Amino acid sequence: MCFFSNAQANDTEAALYNVGFGAVFGTVGAIINKSPDEHLGKVIKKSLWQGALGGYITFESKRILREARRQEQWEYFWMAKLVNAAGTSIKENAALNKDFYDRWHLNIGFSRLEFNTKDEFSVKYKLMPVAFTYTIGIALQTKFELEKTLKTGEFIFSSNTDRFTETNSRGVAFPGNIVVYSPYINDFKLITHEVIHLYQSNDFSVFNTYFNKPIKAWSSNSKIINWVDKHLYLEFHYLIQKPIYILESEPTDSSLYYNNFFEHEAGYFGGTLH
Image 1 (cartoon, helix red, strand yellow):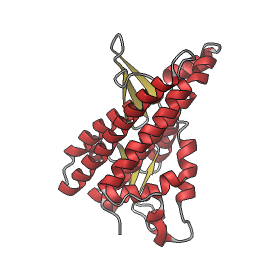
Image 2 (tube, helix red, strand yellow):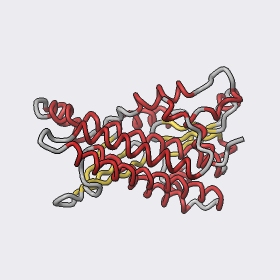
Image 3 (spheres, one colour):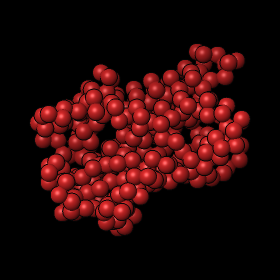
Image 4 (cartoon, helix red, strand yellow):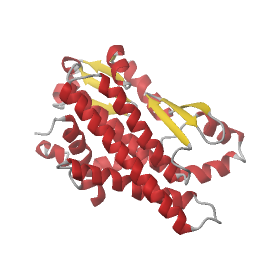
């Protein structure tokens, strides 16, 4: 848990965290997914530098997002999103023990577009069921902000619910979605803060690769599992990220809000630290 609890006080620390995260967990995944006949040392060497590269690119995506907030330019959000998708893709390829350029993906709301570039180029669509469930629930209770969604590439909704004032909050990130307190729908700091939370979920998606082998084994023996594997992207990573977020929180003391690593990182890049 200490790995996640070091606050990012400057760009050097932020870069070290993101690079270290990609290198460590990309390598663990590569070891899990390697073939029995592959040399362990070679696998580790390859996944370390690929995971580190993906982590660094992820860090740069967060810096681009910070620049969007500083300059109040919506155009930067899409640039940051594409760079973040590239970094996440490289980390996932490292964890799958693939070459870093074999497969790329882009998440938009509950949709995942996969671009396979090995041997023959192809595009595959997968639905993310956890994000889809949240989107349906949120859409039934809030207003869909089409303009902000198109400008950022993230599903953004707004609401005037009293829950925001009761919890002294202005926005919240859910899987694949952001809900903003209506009076702050144009607040660059707030939206940047919440988008960083979505990027954090992307960081943790590397853990989904750890289930690749058993899912492939089950899909060869089950038509249902095979269909699920082809059409759905199962978001196991929330089972890891959410408990860590809770452990990092101090629910009885709001003054320690930014002691939570995830909130501190979002506040650091979003400019909401105080």
